[in-house]
Image (cartoon, rainbow, N blue to C red; front, side, top):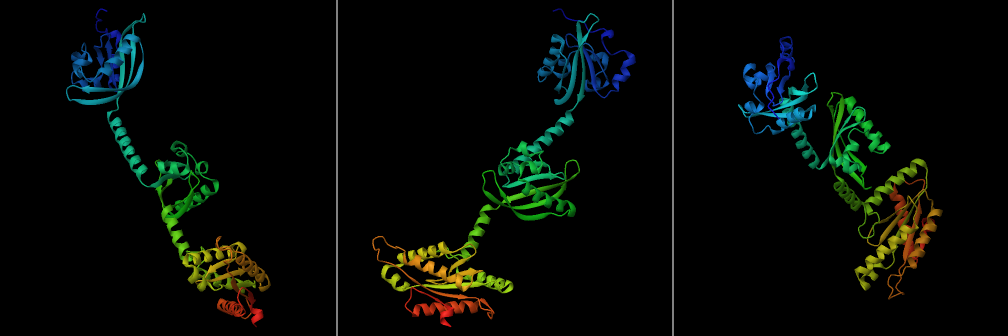
Length: 432
């Protein structure tokens, strides 16, 4: 193809009536001929190139930007000049004089003569270098923040005053069982059970109203169906658009919670039998005594000793003795109702607390435990090995001032049962 001559003034926007306008538009405006040689450049382009117009016209970009580092720029120009395309995209210029890389948003389209033939290129470019640098800096900061927040061993989220999630880290997504893109932008009611979402929303509203941070322990069923416990700190903070928002940071304390519950259970439970221990029994007994006196409800107690337990332990050894205690505890548990409490209060001593039960209702329960105990087979090799227990039963009396009075009567009845030959039930009425 023969070399094209520089475009004539009629093919450029460089006429004097337009020159001032093009110098003031705040963008880089330029035209080239078919060989990419400048035919016009406005003031911003000339300032960038560092030369007057009469020097710039007739020279291509390699004269000012060099051969290397601007291949993409030349390729874009070729698409306009050879294929007649109009392009709008981000471009970068490596300025040869300074070595600086500048970034532009450019619109380039072909210039045509009256016959429709392409005679050159019109380009309008906006310098977005600083904007691009800011965006890159913000992007890198966001990537860094996301990396930090995704690796913090906590659920981190942000919600606005309309109950919508503005931000959530990956731990939130894992806990709720939803992808992050499903959570961010969604209402809390769309990703949480309604009752739980409403409870959190009520807390958010209090924080919005008070402007104070809030700390609490929360429970949440995760995506796998397991209940997990979190220590949550929620603080008020304006959202990106200045509207009220809250930021929550919830640390998983499930293992700590379970350990605390296990220690609590151990503190109130007999380790061998799994029954309540003496301390927790006394606390529950005092509570039930006060409730019965306040409401006029009946309350009964069964005091129990396993007969000849020391002799059995000495003869057959502690492993069998431990088995006897466990088997007897299971007998008691099978005979009890919801609300009843069985406790191991000593070595072979047990108590059964029966709220809302009078003496006549307690005696059949004691008899069922006694019969089940006698039917236990402790050793398949020694079917003749059997155990029995003695029972003392008492009910709350109008003059009782504390649970100790009821306990003393049940203990006295138990003593009478042992005196009368064991493996039997005595009530306080029979001792009176």
